[in-house]
Figure 1 (tube, helix red, strand yellow):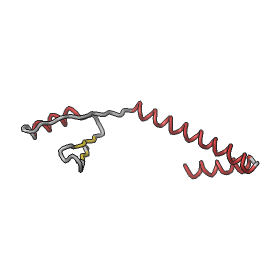
Figure 2: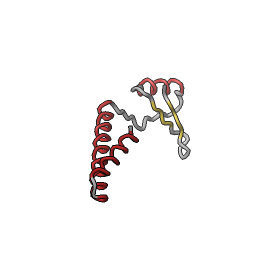
Figure 3: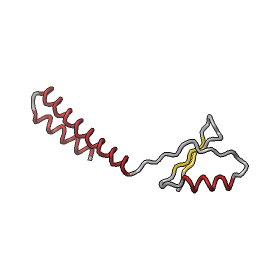
Figure 4: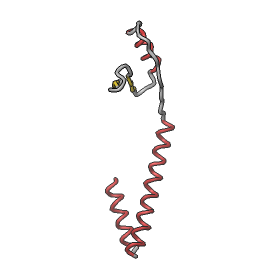
Length: 96
């Protein structure tokens, strides 16, 4: 289902978001409904499964590296690896 919103600074600009690529259908329908208006398509963006997979991989890497960093810091700060491991396990539990 398409979502649309207007901008306060430019009331003639409309942003339309859809879950699927329906840009041509929407453009044709807008031209049909508003034949006297000068319609301009400023930008069409598509985010596919490749970008989603890339973001998921980066997020997992960031999570793992941050937990390793916390493990090293706590082990160094308190001079006990046991505290660090317990702290990271607690963080993993909280995240999950």
